[in-house]
Amino acid sequence: MSSFQKETVGFRPLILCIEDNPTYLVLRKKVLEREGYEVIGVTTTDETLKAIHEFPVCAIIADHMLQGTTGAELAREMKKIKPDVPIILFSGTVPQSLNAVDVYVNKGEPTAKFLGIIRAVVQRYRS
Image: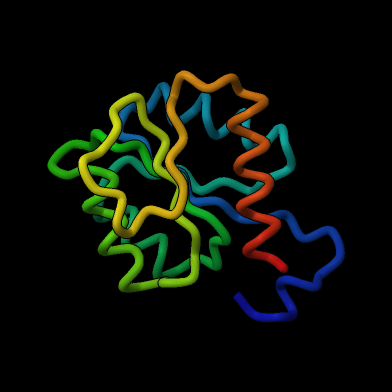
């Protein structure tokens, strides 16, 4: 992300949200947009990698159990492309390894706590 993008007044942080269940993706996207974020929602690994290359995301929220892979495995690939962008694993299943994941949030957490964690991660990235 360029320093211009970080300093632009009114800049809405861009979050990449990865969820293979379209219903959950729409719900998560709405919650985040209501909090003032721009959100790109994707459901596949290919869409994820394409979006990471194309957009100046400031945080990534990934489900863990994805079709054909896991969020933790996908995090390793994403870090090769954008090593400084924080990856938040949002799942009801605790992964065996969190190597490339920056933050783990259990899906059972209240929405307010989830949003507080997202806000803190985005603020750290943008500062």
